[in-house]
Length: 223
Image 1 (cartoon, helix red, strand yellow):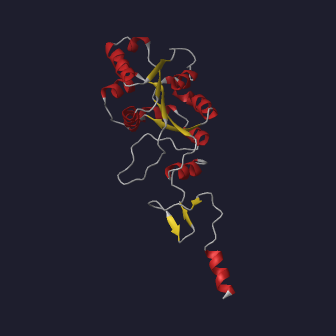
Image 2 (cartoon, rainbow, N blue to C red):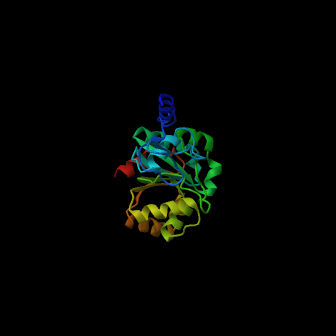
């Protein structure tokens, strides 16, 4: 009898794993009767993002989540500066790139810095959610094309879909533009900026031909 009790205690002892809790199991998780629920590591979640994923996607509230949406502007390659500053303020940063912006980025470096994959495409049908929900959004550098499409309600890529959802939900959204003087002078661009401001978006302009003022994005987010 003592041997059986010892075997039972061994089989049902909590595993030495950071991903367990006593809550009810969610879809895709494994339950050991009366002891724990364990969420296997999600494929595609980089580095330290696994622990954050399990905490946030299971309903736990860890650090605040900031989506940084990067467009195909010349300053895009320097987005690591913005990421570092945001993380220094306590944000858990997830980067979303427009399809054209991917070529501007060192994706591996960004994923190592944030602990999250860089996404630029929609999920496939039936694929589980890949990111925690955002608490706020920064768009930087924000280009002429993305701003006009966003203001017009066009959702033809994952980044624009994320922006449409963020404004619809009333999340804090800050924009730091990277648009030439010639393009900025177009009436359609002015209308788009006014449309986004009316939706509560906080907009700052990055100086053309100078060091990109990444800090303005977080200043705008703080209000």
